[in-house]
Length: 90
Image 1 (cartoon, rainbow, N blue to C red):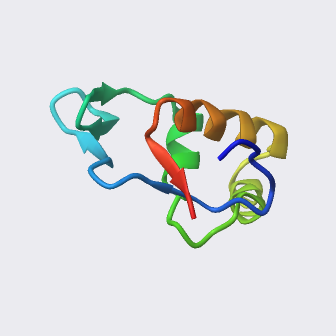
Image 2: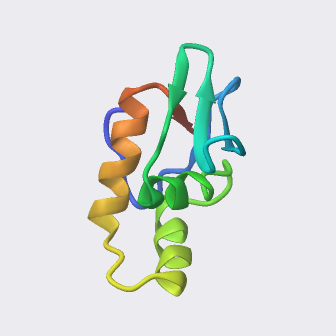
């Protein structure tokens, strides 16, 4: 996907999963090419990438939990994960 908008619907790619590493005590993103350790902001966004919720819905849900959530920030996080081929768009 070239342009990500508020109507775009992200989901984790097949073979990618967000899980909790009990040894390290942190969330990790596992995928066939490796492991990423997302920060708390990225983890909150990734948890909502369910393949049914558009970016606008993710922003709304995050805004109910956190102050100062901006759509542009969520789009930037998703764009980075899209470049890493961790998420795809439905």
